[in-house]
Length: 501
Ligand code: ADP
Ligand code: MG
Image (cartoon, rainbow, N blue to C red; front, side):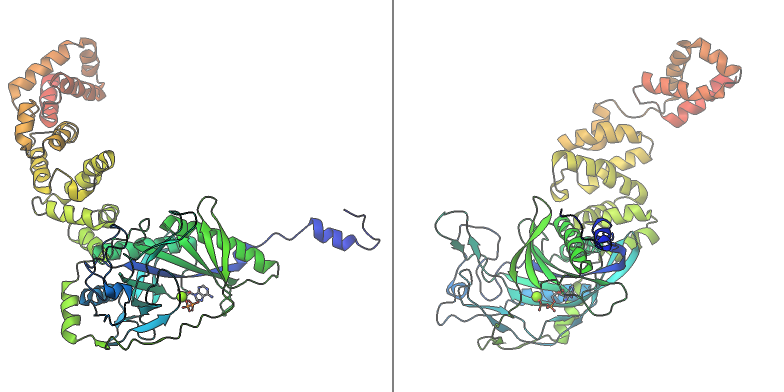
């Protein structure tokens, strides 16, 4: 560093004492755009399979390929799914709709345009409720519209060429667009988790971000707190998990505040997330506005949503997570924690609901589902729908515990694993064949008690002198001698009778 000129002291002071950045002075603003692939059997405008994967270029009729003369026809199921989502998000459903052509050139877009809803999204406004450490809040949606997916360009098969697979071209999507209404990476994480839960509850989309059936772009800007004008945003793409959305926003928020606080301008641009190091890099600047030359697709007549259609979809909506949590806590009297964990996914809800058809012991049912059932699923890497022990069988096992024929620990640690091996067997038969049915036979228990007390005369003397806490030791010994079969309540009672007399 050159020596300072005389009088340069202030500059040097500024150089060494750079003001720390006050991140708290800034507000982060985030809007998300989420594409969700609809679980229809066929594509949006033709009968080609909409299934993920498949031999490349096998789900491709002339309509998918956009051959001259091919005419699209709207898939009604896709419209129903979009409406279902809209109703679940408390949105307004637009009655008159049309599709527009969004023109651009790309190798995986055979027609040279994408069919989308331009100015008439089928779903307008609405909100999704989220929970974070700061409490509960409704995140406002801007719109949900229907559009077709493009094909897939594959760059890593051939070193010299890009390969194109058009199986995905024309698969129906909904795009869920939020208002710039999220304010932290944590909120975006909570929003996407909730959104995915709702998509899955409604069976509208499988929500699998790794396979690309749910894709998210995050728009981020920062501004000084109190400022009403939005800052310039950047858009981050290639976010293939909810966790990566959170990481990208955390990184971008700091990067943008560093820029703005240094008085440097933010470029409006599209960036890509690098999951290997949690940073982002610029893909393209968004200076020049795209000209998509939108116009109403002349091959598709406008479509109207009738009262009948709307009401029939409304009537078929399943109960949503928030509603179920309320029912489980208020009617079944479950602790809120249990209710929320059960409602985290639809499969668990279905299993639990089925279980409650066979037992009224709801808290025990929740304990079984969240305890032994979940651990067995994790251990074996199974999904609940393939879980061998069905709710009716589990209820039969629970009944044995209620009736005092089995202790909970014997049921959970011995019978339940045996049932996993042979799920068609009756729990009572298994317990009998393993000789584990709890004994309520007074004389049998008394003989274990005598054996136990005979083994520790000193302790018995101590007990009689007043060390009443030793009762636990005696009960434990009887449990051991009986291999867990002695009914603990009865054991306790018989022990007291014996020791006090
Ligand atoms: P574009 O035309 O660039 O796609 P839109 O107005 O359609 O922009 O908004 C796309 C998404 O970006 C929406 O989710 C919206 O909430 C969000 N968004 C718009 N402006 C901002 C901003 N300044 N900061 C953060 N998010 C924003
Ligand atoms: Mg956009």
